Length: 210
Image (cartoon, rainbow, N blue to C red):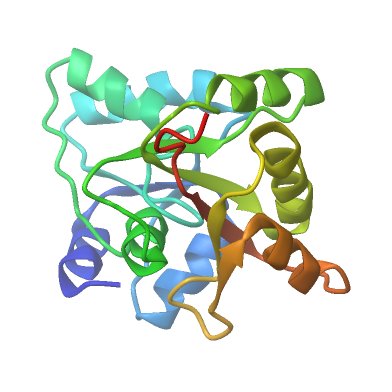
């Protein structure tokens, strides 16, 4: 957490967050009291007009995410778009980014990369998307819950063949872990393990293999 981020949270009128309990614990740790309003995937359509109305009334709203950066693979995009469309000032307050942290530590080319975020949960849609990405020459970055990483690696190997891959788990936290290798070796390392938390999976691009 940056000092600027703490100042913004301490000075805003409302904090829009995915989980008010988790956000409350975070701000309590830093001695900040705030008014929280839940904003997540299941209430975004209802909450967005409410928050926009608060902005219209001259109130300041801070948008935070449970993990990662608001708007990146989370519903914050809807609120940000609504605020921009109505002419309100939207200010980024950057912090740690698991996506960029995983990319730069991967050792794979990162001058150009493709961020895919979370793949579709349904098998058919997910596999179709992976098939579409097979020829992608750039390094690719995926987000996944740790318990589903093994499934993703198996699908990548089935559909793409062997690739270099880096699995980053719990980045910047106490139990940070970075696994590097090819798809076969990483799957072997994870066979007898139950991963927890969130993971970022960085995969080498096609680079003219096929």
